[in-house]
Image 1 (spheres, rainbow, N blue to C red):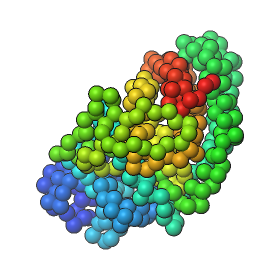
Image 2 (cartoon, helix red, strand yellow):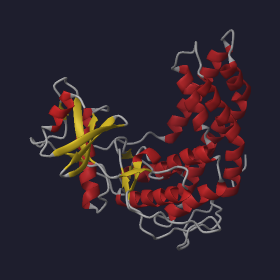
Image 3 (tube, rainbow, N blue to C red):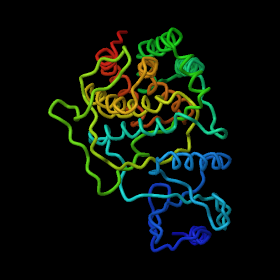
Image 4 (cartoon, rainbow, N blue to C red):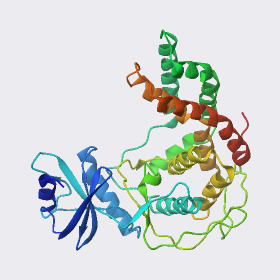
Length: 363
């Protein structure tokens, strides 16, 4: 650990017994418990609102978060001798949610539902509002066409460009359809209500930001692929396999709320579900059970179900890969980038089956 980082820790009322590096931060063993020292990488202006959010969650009984701790002067940001800014956060003995373990993914889905229940009434100030999805789709579709125009003008073209151009029309059909479906849905009302009621989202709910705390048991799936519990409420677009939510306790800490905002809450569920499905090849039973685990605690309305369906229709991964390509060094395209593109194209058929069987959507 660098001397200037030790100097930062001296600014807090803590007794440090040991430190060790972790991804982008420093874990600190102290007599006050496990803490995490992290450099401020996002806008420092967001930190007061973030602290208000952590305080609000704690007041509502949701305590397992990486709350930011004040220094001896009562300030939440501390400066090192080199001028860099740091925050010190509450941390926990545990590990990231294992994306290979369905039971942990279901528990994380239930945890998200509990979090959304608490965050359904927002802070009075400090939380930004999310962008209207129609505006985002229009912008992304325009960017996809811009990338295609650029590639058409390239000579010579590489493997990445040939694959992108070959499948562009097929993938863009999904993007165009998502916008059309959105315009004929109840999205506007759902978005307006979420903004007016100041419903909050986590903003980046993925397995990296979900800690399974040490010493807790994981629920066991039944032979049918679900987990024991009660039935759930779901919108009419949803066709499930009957999985249910287990009531066994599993302690989970939710971390890194840096991107929290006022928006439609199930955006978090869509994001988490998509990330998991991309890793699991769009396995229907797992996706269905994740939706069930969430709905057992916070039932999904028909509008929210329709929203998740619409977000899944949009070829988000394809757009992200195209956007990354356009803003990168195009003289050298990595093998990993080509593989990501091929996977996104290949998984479209798997996602199509998922949408047909889980949401009764047919292209």
